[in-house]
Image (cartoon, rainbow, N blue to C red; front, side, top):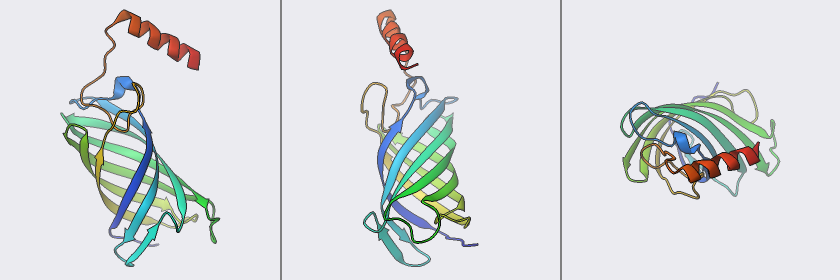
Length: 176
């Protein structure tokens, strides 16, 4: 069993998809997130080792549910699944990581947020090797389109225009 006391990571977030009705930052609101990302730089304090995307391209998906305990302050839990795209790993499976990530986040100003994330990973390096980590995350939320955002805007999104509601129903029906 390997314990890593602190891991510092700089992650490049590729896409975060959120249901518009759940994009909220108000007390009592839930937020469901799906994140696809890749570490650009990773430094491990216990070994003093730095790795970059040039060493290994590992694509990670994070699926989570968060609850705003007060306005702009959320607690949540994500599940992480990671696969190594290149190069082929010398040991273990290409399925590199399964982790559970409890966290506390604060949307402190406009699109900016910070979070403290605990990593509990029973599967790492493509093997059943346990890891534990702590991450401080700083991020920014940028809208991509009406239904896709890198992070949610504060407050729930409500459809009040009947024609907009009908277009949304038609779009959802076309996807089914």
